[in-house]
Image 1: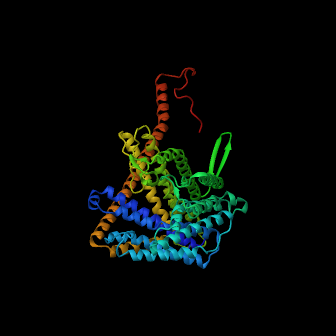
Image 2: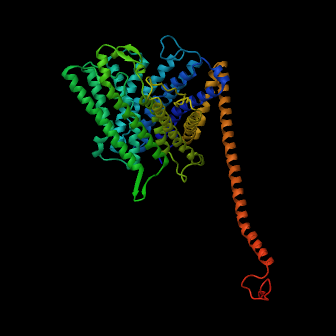
Amino acid sequence: MADSSFFSSLGSASALLQVQLGLGLVLGAVGIAVSSSPDLRKHMDGATWESTLRAAAKAASPALLLTVFALIQAHAASPDILTSAGLLVSGAAVTLSAFIAVLGPIRGSSAPEEDGPAPFVTASRVLSSIQAFGQFVLIFGTLPSGSQLLCASLFVRLALTVQTVRAVSRALLLGASPVSKALRDMEPVLTLAPFLGGLALLDAMSWGPSGIMLTLLQPVVYCTLLVVMIAFVRLSLGAGIDSFGGPDLAFTFQLEGAVGSTVEAARAAIVFAIYAAMIFSLGRVLHGTFAVEMSMSGFSVQWGDPLASAAAKMSLLAIVTHFADFALGVLGSEEEHAQAANGALPINGVEVSGASAPAHLRDLTVTDYAKAVVTPAHTLLLGLVAARMSLPDPDKSGALNVAAMPFSYGFVLASMGVMMQVVLLIFFGIAHADESHASQPCFDTTGTVQWSVKSQVLGKIVEGFRLATVFLLEGGLLLGCIGLGPVPLAVGGFSTASALYLLSPAEARETGLMVVKVCTRSLGSSIETILEKQRQAQEAAAARKAAAVAKALEAESAPKHKTQAEKGSGGSGGPKQGAPAGAKKDGPKRKK
């Protein structure tokens, strides 16, 4: 087990995961409370609580890259002062940025992105500068061992460099430039860094450090080549990318002629290599995690640790979703390009220019929604990896860490909830596939489809499946966050809640207390319902057991009554047939 103290790489990764997953947990809990309480829904009507929490999640999004960097360092790199200091500084800056993103709207301040004098704009710029400094220090940390983790670490450091430059640009309010445009074009590729880093960690956990022969089979190598190509095209040829709001890697360069054809062919080859290497890495992870045994009677699948197997399944789900999204995007790209060449691209019934088609106006498919559901689960994938790495040794760890160890498996429940979300979304798409205009699904704050079915019986089944999905997701996230570290979670959660309560106006305090009461009451009623069902099940089991015992006693006593009846009928009819004349009715007496 790696060192899981707070100032270690693994401790920093656990704290950052608690911040990210905690925001999602709070968003889902508040949404459930608002939807289940009419009074609270009426009280919060018109409030911007959902947009505020989502803004906080966006402010905390750089923590995902810091998390995968910390996990790689904790697994295969020796501790160093630069890594510890960089994670501490940048992690604190990201956490405070998320706090300000929540506190600003509560205090009635304008958003940090808006122009004009706002109380929190200066603080946001200062925190961006501090975050950039911490990330810059991390770039010079110790390199890990093993080709898969070395390549993943270098790609993550490249993403940190780009993120650092963008943070400095925001802090200094620098305008648009070719460099800033190139960094913006790199973003679709660099967003894969956390997932690919988690995939490399699973590979290292399954097979150990790999040799240099497998370097060319790492997907991060080809992602780096694609980033270099984007920078070359933007800075040297002066052309950007055009994706039409499609998949991350299904973009094209805005080049024409022979140069454009050559660059486009190279881009397509690199993208193909990225997906081929991702499939190869996934195959290695699945082969190292699961064991399939086949015989004449059938086959069986075995796996070891539930956390590793759940992480492998989440990786499979993410790659299948990305590949399906990319394949469908490529199939539909030719029609989009033809429509864009005519000067207009019809998107959701609106005629807009093909070059300026915003992504959120494109016709969305089931794969788009599935990707939107699975992409936040990259944090859950890193949570499973961190929980697997932080499993305590009972002989060397404290009693509190050992007691919190079972809670880490809550992430397995949350992964089941994510898979159920995708299954429910797929069934929704199948049910509305024959419609001329496909219905757009409606999601709750947890990302679960809200599906109203006309059939009463089927509607109850769908609603029960949806409620089970939400329960597994929210409950699993809560248990998993406790398992990552109960003390940091309790101290950090209490300190954040106390600070928000003290700095909020009276109306916001009243709303917060109402939300807490509704959530507590809902949790209590849910626990009471579960206990009542368990009591009824126990009573039903006891009744069935008593009925079985009574039936067994009746079966045992039935032959005795029958024998006594036969004896009684034989004695009243005289001597038995075949008995000698003059013999006694009861036959000879037995000797004692």
